[in-house]
Image 1 (cartoon, rainbow, N blue to C red):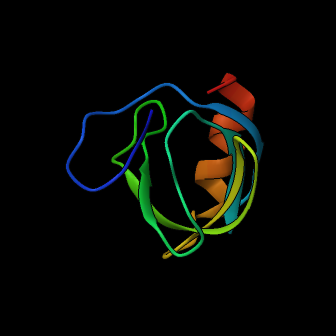
Image 2 (image 1 turned 30 degrees about the vertical axis):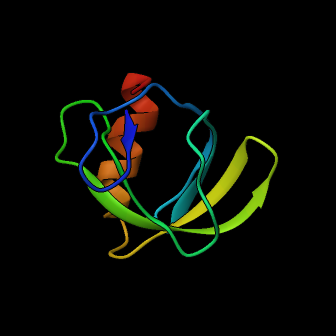
Length: 79
């Protein structure tokens, strides 16, 4: 799930995920610089900032990088 400050999570289609950030498609009205939180299966929400936007597609950078082992576990489990 993806959320802005306050509202509940919404579904987002994640296209790319790395230790530094992610790309996704969402219906949220987000702008460059906005704070978002990405909830990945089995993990606490990760804080990120929108760094680019093209229509409904956004690119976000985590404020604290994911640990490589966490990314590996997500890839391995299909999370």
